[in-house]
Length: 204
Image (cartoon, rainbow, N blue to C red):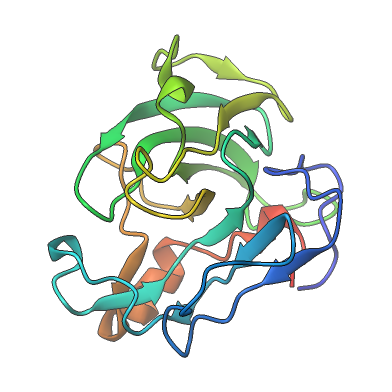
């Protein structure tokens, strides 16, 4: 992925070795993992994983990065930004509690910040319900600040605990983004929802 952006704070502090999942063969028969933390990859076709009506039977290309860990694991803002919106996406298989933060960044990010500034939105999904307590649109968040925790399965849309982190160059209308898209829509999705490793660093 090139030079890692040292000035961006980690969204999840991975302070020990972690597992990188490969979901191209479909969902695992056993979700048990020997590591505390796990990574789910960007731009990955995941057949058979998105079976609820929300996905229409055809959306299975993942356009964020999943950072997995125990429920309650802190989630941090990677840079200074502003709370754009938040809410609970309650559909079966959706994000559950979700926060969208608006950032102004040199884009695309480079070690020298030589590119023009532009707004970029980041979605943090599958959070704990209590993560939304006390939030307000326009509230400032500092780089590295804890903004949420990973939710339990019963509150986060029905998934094993993790945060779905997704960048968007298109402003969300509501606190939601399509975290998986149709394979036929990949070309535009790669433009609208760029690789999160641009700010997360070379996780894999």
